[in-house]
Length: 233
Image (tube, rainbow, N blue to C red; front, side):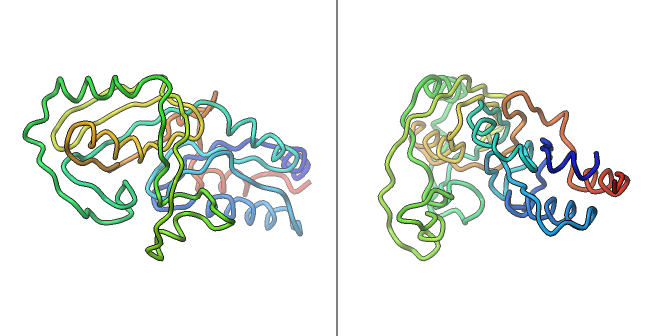
């Protein structure tokens, strides 16, 4: 690929590393392309945020393809990960510390499988307070970190499948296919509630986004190495 390829539009499928924000990945790639081809600016954006503690498929669009971001973002997603039962956190994941503990000795494998099944189909879901959704122009996680209480409206999402892949209590492994806008952290929290316990998301990996899969993705390091060998023409 040369500079015109990036300007005309490219879709880069990046395997987002742990502890990086989606915005940091976009910034790194934009900076690298500008530096490589000595550009003052180039459009680069991502199609669907991944939390810092999640890894996996992050679709990056460059140049004219940034106009397709909404199209890519609207596609179905697939995730694998783990839910840890017996506790809750304010962020519904490990970004914040466990604030409440609950019993798990009443939970059976049958309960877990039935609960996963109950999520399939159209459901109403409340996004986490620690999310990038904006209210009055301010992102919710900014309000949450200030300790401000915010009323969050439920939204309809669709869970196409919810498969339990491993049960090693208190940790439960899963695979979920879902519509855009689904918060897996909220599912983890609600999962615990339905089991008369607590639950939080302890790991998450996006394995598919539309037709793009993690098997066909590149690490940031691999992309930068490939870019370094591209033509400057």
